[in-house]
Length: 198
Image (cartoon, rainbow, N blue to C red; front, side, top):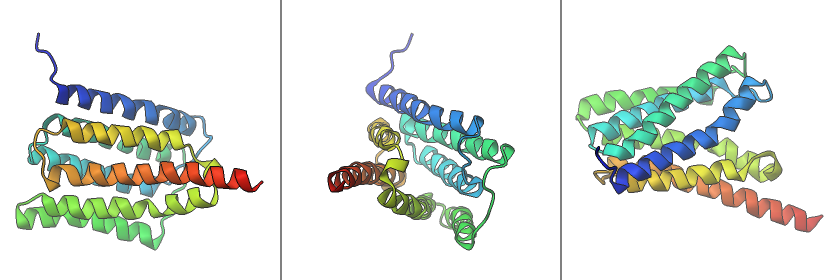
């Protein structure tokens, strides 16, 4: 029986954290307590899945596993949100993000290098965090810092698990790590400042 090396262990831990983080979220969708924006989750599904393919293509090894699992989960959330008749409104910016995400494939094909696809998709995902930053700044008690803290740890483990380190394999998880860490810190700082003001 083959023993897992430390990179594979880091990957398995990252996948476990991903499941733990998403489970309560998916459960609240099933219960009808929240209605996620369908188109947003479709965009995240596309970006995460293409990044996973780019990482596999660039020999990320076990480091790509959690990204692949996350892609499958985001696809499931998008389908679940659609089946529950969640928010399906589509704004102009949603279409812009969608087209930008799809445009990454021709760049990859033309250049024969997945780097440009990863760069485009990372930018799309980072821009997608802007409404969340505004939301948690206005209402830090309306979001769970633990959710984002788990993803911060998960992305650290993803980076540790990489077999090959390059911009193509690490840009996306590093950007997501920073984004999740900033949201976690913002929620905690804003909660403290608002509580102190009362």
